[in-house]
Image (cartoon, rainbow, N blue to C red; front, side):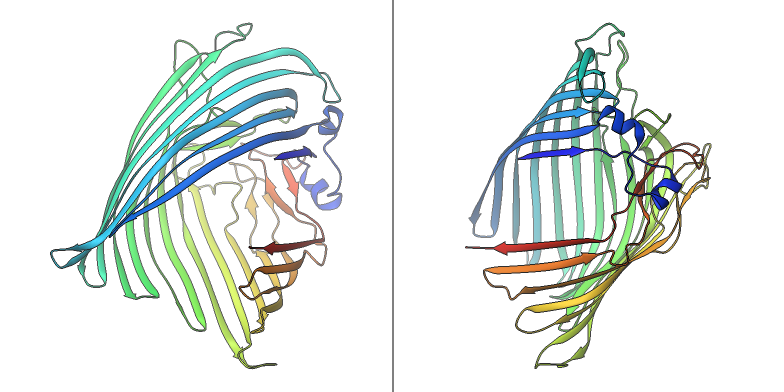
Length: 435
């Protein structure tokens, strides 16, 4: 697969809202691009033995990236690995028990080079060259023991071992070689109540981890990586289910993070730099439902559905310089709602609204905010569960000018180019065929 993109770059807030089609002048001068040639191969095999199902497979993904930005990046990435997963669902001593165990193996090699961007996406002198290697081994197990016919105690664990190793091949700016090993244990415990076959109530406490990528890491011999792994303890409770004319999915959570990996732009002409934030909290609500509130309007068994998906994100710093400030880049409230007519033949049509209800900040200091917005959309299509389906969708029909995302800064003046304008009026179409 080949992708080729010219990068318009970020704009100031005023430019994003008043001239959203313009490009950042520096990006134009340097003709910044991101061009990727990639080949992906994968295989998965499933074997069943009575109450036990085993999945195993291998994969490989090769990419060449030609990426002129403020420097000319030219690199090759090879990722490959395999996995095995087994699920055993049987009765033990008269109690149902579902046991899941597996192993993931991931290897990667990054042959990375940076050159001077001599203008017009022309490669100049070599400035940086490394060979990066990574290994990630993840072993996990989870057991759901139904001590009551419809209530299970769920317990599990995951063990992660990861290695990052960099060999610096350009020593004109010092030796950036180094390595780092991460060993992390992530347990989980919870309860699952299957009220009936279409209704669940759940609660759990779990630990998770994310290790830095080579994009984030810096090394300096003889020291190792300057970044710690991000870890989180998450508490969650919720319910999901469906009835003939109603479905729902509701959960509330709180994640207490240590060493969150945050990418912050430190100057107007540099990429963002990843660093650890000591303590943060991510908490909120995720809610969705769909209900058929009118039936048999124009034909027997047709429906008028109201669908809605809402997220509440209360993310904030829990200590140090920005204690109590909202974490930037994340809308606190977002709602997508849709009124959709469905005909039993498979035809459907209706409007939808995307509504960001409240400003979010572009910087840690909470000094520059992104304005709320609402977008009107409409889609129609056909899907009868047959060999083909298709759709036509118009988005942002009123051509609303808005900011879709922002690069994060420590403290952002109003004139800093941090923002990506949202798409204007657009039409999308798709067709699916199966045989």
